[in-house]
Image 1: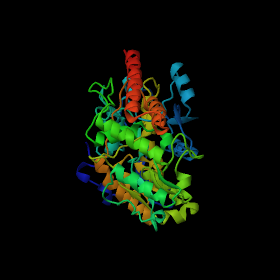
Image 2: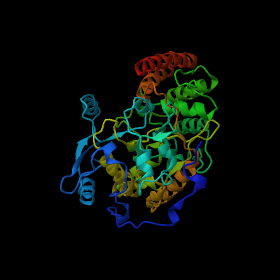
Image 3: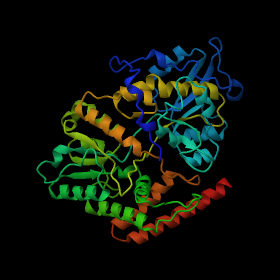
Image 4: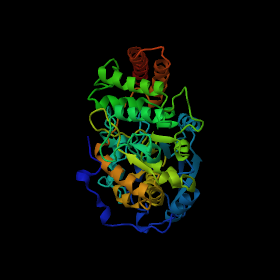
Length: 451
């Protein structure tokens, strides 16, 4: 396991950056001239008289018109053609040989193994603003060595990230129940979390515990197995074994969670498709969400809940492992025509105004260590969550990820089979065997496709 910061090195005390309100422009972080990668391999960098056009496919809420205008002002040799991210359109563009130059995405071993992303190590080595020693090790989720995600070359960079199994709690809902809130420094066991949730339900709390069920459970399943010292995949990542004590314990916890009625499942969904509105409304005591979730507590509507909110460490079944489920960021497609110019845009996106603004809002942790001092700490819950996130970073590591299939495939199978267990028609052994058989079939199909 790699530490997020080498020896907890936190360079934020020096070189502190000033913030002027919420709209800040830090002059030293412009991407202009950062990369010296050869244009012969990555297309022209253009000139002010004849700029090159970089097609960016991202979400407009993260890559705004103001950011585009600022980048083009600072880099008159590059124009940005922005396209709202759409998976169907992206696939069509890739199939037609007209790939965007920079694309929103999540780290995925299958994507990397298919050779669909450009390696970035040479760009990073020649950059003045995105350097290897400033990249937090959460970016390892975007590394791949040909077989294993988390090692090898970088194939993309994080936009921002969170340790996604930390538990946000509204301590006000614990009052008068006889149930103590989770400790803010020592991680609880998953069993303890579930027992507290059951006790809160008996005390009348409407929604004691959310685990964002609707966003997929395969990552949580793998985390629980790894925390017990078990393994899901074979060494070659081509098969899985879920008929183990570790896997069955994790699956049984998820079945118990669903049967206890303490939170949301596919059979008992929230209308919003996420925990945040229910938590902000003061009806949910605990939700398994990362640091980013604190961004929901900054509105006037959430003020009352924010006063009694805190972020507890990620629970464990033994070893302290605090995973990243998402790790969304950006990559340069292997077939992009303007890679060098796309790198200039990516530099700007992860190091300059967009990254500074994201950090200052508290909607995620920065990809660069040097930006951590921008995280908000004005309110008590913000300061507490910031300190908790820093403590959590020693336990962050990428989860196993086979090149032969995607998390979406995993999530569909796990959800369907767990619901059979929750509804009472299948034992945990049956659930484990059925998931194992279906995943092994998908892995075999994926292996055949890759050749």
